[in-house]
Length: 484
Image 1 (cartoon, rainbow, N blue to C red):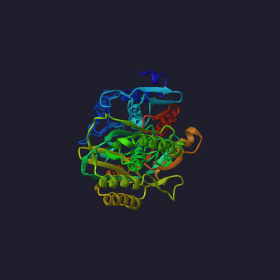
Image 2: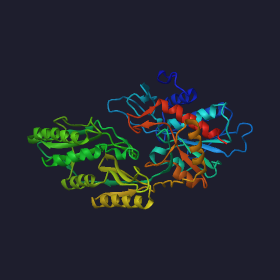
Image 3: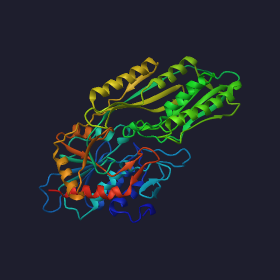
Image 4: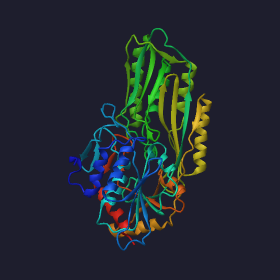
């Protein structure tokens, strides 16, 4: 047992959460986690199957006397976002997550924790293993590749799920139940810029933005957090006034995360290096003042590389096209909901930029709970990138989940929460891409809600789970399963 979870309750939940944390599970590499689920199912003599996409479904019969109760499916996803601090040595394909208890929260040591959605998987396995619960027929659906496009849900084998009630265990606020989510799509621009030899009498330097918090590009998009790609691009545009030439840009890792770090390789005229260093230092102070309330650890550095290093740079025309395109792209909240106070309706995020050989690729992500708004903002981003000379590709995207405030399982959840905790359950929608929208299309007639314990800073190394909220989440889940 990990010392970080020693003594925590409910014991079964934390046992499986710790076990899962020892299993590498990046998106597209969930095989070990899937095998673990199948092993647990076999241990308890339960029927289990895996579909062609890698999704796993386990069935647990009703406890005696509860056979006529409508079946419920508990759903979670096996993969996790893999982010780490720059100085952290960690291989997400081999190394276990190092759990650290810090006061009221559980975190990881310099990496993402994987509570998104290790919480849902652990809760499902705990229900699966608990012989004392009284429940109707249960199914447990574990999907794959949620974090990189909801691939498992999109390719779920028809007829695999028999239940017509689904509890999605992938929300992040205890005391709230979610009944709607945003749809989304990605817009990717690619440039093949003309390359030239770096000018004579120039020196290579690495420009870096780091120290930003990052976070979920849906859940955290309204917090005003710094975007490392947009920030570094601003610095490059200023340095261009001193004759700086861009060679490469690399930042961000996940399409659904606000980028925390970005690096650029630039060539500076030797005669203006000190001036460039002073410009960067001064601009860093301006940027820190901008972001102080939300991102106080921002750092912008300019470090000279090997003086003898020779290389290529983008043509001036292509450098201007790419940098001005990035500057013009929206990244943040575009529209708030007119129906649900405080809910972001529409947003866009500049997510990833990569340089490989002679290609620069920029990934952006759009979200909206209104289908026509999603189409509008995605069209706008595509048009802007096209005007900037990029080749543009767009994903098919995924649907939103329209709230149903008359949902029978929502009414049951509200009653159970009131009876157990003597307070009202908050009913919300979320500006993120839950699998419920897709599952509702794949399994017609599905009645769904989503809930979970309190998490913060998911998709970043500051990800944390509030320990006490897990006990409340578990009691709520059990009450719903045992309700008649």
